[in-house]
Image (cartoon, rainbow, N blue to C red; front, side, top):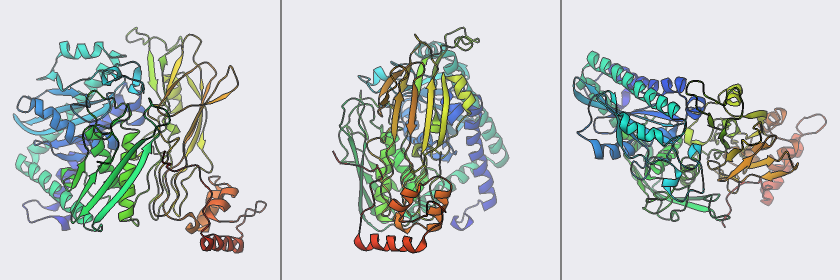
Length: 615
């Protein structure tokens, strides 16, 4: 990094020490929450993010947590400061989740903002966002696709101080807690977040005591300058021009058989780029994306495509412009619903941006990741030993899901995708808690979890292999469990490949009914009831591939066959590799003839059950 520094009073070592200390402090905010949270998805899947912003509200450091919680930080911070700038004191904590005010994401993701003071001077803002145990509404979790408006989706919280000068505002926070389920757990997590951010303030003050406020501010300014210069340099490597991308969400959970189209026009001019979503369709239900969420997924596509060493700060996003007209899917107006914005429309926003970037610089393009596929379970615990929370005496309601059902990343030139790292919104930081903990938390028995053969995204470099999962409901009569797929998408449309690769596979979900012995299709962006003995079945398609599958190294195809990832039939049909079924050896002569014949004739590869289809 030293070669990128301008002539300043900061030596590279001091800059590195200060910057990485601030980054470590930011990271520790999230780490403490992961270790102690009551929320299943925060503690079991790292569904959270922590960001440090300077006193102007510009991102200084971004910790390695979920993209969807981190790259959004500046927009909700600005919305909060519009109400409280000049009115925030040491020890204050502001809470907000209203996507039409803070414009960040869906209601279960609560935003916390704490001003960081050093000797009575405001120096930073600590921003945290995470998926809480509950936020009110018709059902736990926030994934009810039939909500009439955002009020029906859950409790809409405008920016409000829940802690003032170190004292909890119980009359305000009490009103919020009265309108959520599992209130003691929600309260505990909120105080955990607040305490973690106050510890960050203590650590930051120690850093300033050591190096001085001017030096710390100078380091932050220099890193933002480096980020902007670095990003502009990367953009100049992209040929000037206009590039497009389009795809669709399966549906909006309300109007059947009507896909929701998202379209982008990328304009690259010099050292700046503009992503214009003006051709995206008008707002619908449930899958609309608030403006901050839209920005977040645009940035995700850019950072995944360009130099991975670029710091994720305000400077790096300065050359990127986003046009998202109000009243469209990518910038809804009140009181439209947006419960699945992070999982559905957000994923597609990244997909169309990756497609456009892939047309501009195919050699560097990252292929889209597998779409989100996690059925969530909601209900009241029927098991005598766990039905009542001994700490509160309250009947325990559960909300959780098997994150092991997800796919993973797409390919890039030179590298196959990674299995099991989740959808693009988590950016590879998803963790999978133990099966034993999941079975304790909700009444489902994990029967099978495995990589699913022939689900990789085909290409010269393949997208990740998908997963297959079976979970059996162990609830009891009178205790129905609801299966929500409001955050799942990709059964009708799937990610497109890059650089000539065909599309990835579509997802599949079913419920096997114990009483009838029949297997029913479980739709994405929907809900269904499950009873004792019913089995929820998912088969995730993998991430998209890069390049022509007929160019994949024969040795790589053989290795995939040996590992059970690719079948003999698929090796021949998709990759043109002929393997003897008895000896499992490659017939190189037959393989060469088959590949040459297909390339010469331009014979299309067999359909892989994926890809976008215009309605």
